[in-house]
Image (cartoon, rainbow, N blue to C red; front, top):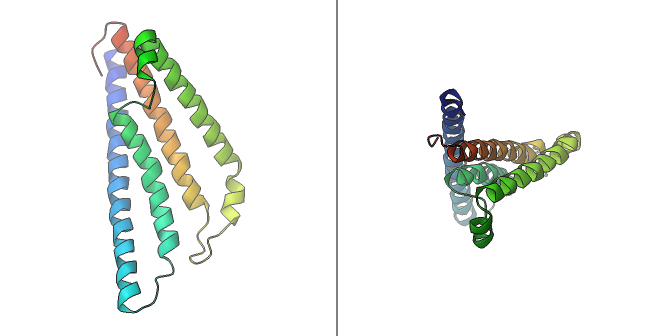
Length: 164
């Protein structure tokens, strides 16, 4: 793998990391703020903040799926260590490939039903469910890119190249 490809992979990795960290921080702050506001409203007015549930659900979806990709950057997907040690780096590539295929199937399924989600609305805020399911589409897409980076980097290292 050429140094141009290694630089391109590093650039994609840095861009994804920037987006993931930014989304994770923003959604975390907004989620905590929403929950804090709801608690204050609940106890100060003895009432409720009706949008709290849907807003928390939306923010949590984005935090979960984008955060999953961010966690994947730092480490591997869960695997069986004994088998990995026995089978080596080819086993890891097989695991990553299976994960890519699985995520691709999830993306295909979510995309297939996108028109159905777009007409469904939440009860209070009347938000389209696409806002919720798009979090999964974006997160799964980021994860596929991360797995591809890992596969290409691993192949590059095994062929005697420098680490990415």
